[in-house]
Length: 298
Image (cartoon, rainbow, N blue to C red; front, side, top):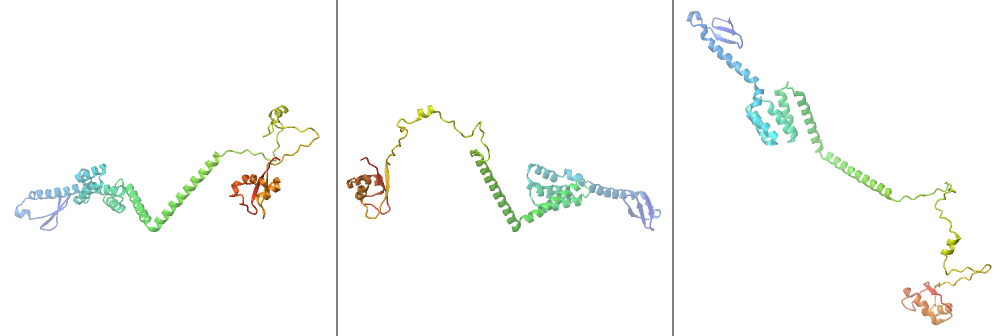
């Protein structure tokens, strides 16, 4: 330790820390220098203790009861209690940075309060600008800022309307895809009809869709027993039709029609029975009405 005389009454004591003490003219007063050494030592210890306390903030964060309790609440998922513990720790020691980091994580990931998250990220970086995680935390802060901007934009009525229209179009597109898939599936299940082109020659070896010609024996066996073959050179007499069709004209009656077809007016009831479904009575005749005239054997 060195002393430097500034004046008759002041002496500078150089060293760490520096101090100025009074010079009482030891030679005159007879007071020895060693009486002031304890005072200097006390001052040095006090200043050294303050510097040591300032440099141990990070160590205090690791053992602070409120910080430890808040971290425990975070692990349990009790984020409200964790927030309260971290805030209490900051009230007692505002220089601690770790509580700000924990609060930022809670507000970003669990409470979705981006403004609070950005604030605590900034405070952590101010208190720990040279932290190992500074770059990572800066990146997280940018992500939170982007999320905040997206939230503000998406909450506007115009954006909500566009999003709703987009969702409607997506739904309609999905419906059209489903209808198309159903139509294709239905078409695939339909039987395939094979067609032969007119330009394609039919093979003589294997004619397509051609049934074999029946043999004469088969024709004889399958011919109906009632069928008769007319002798050669003779014509077969055509059979008389079972009924005829007549359209009623003005002045017609069933008796007149029976006389015309049967030659007997008394057979009108035959015509009436054949057309009962279209006539309410024998006299129910209308011009243009169609009547069935049954054939009778003479």
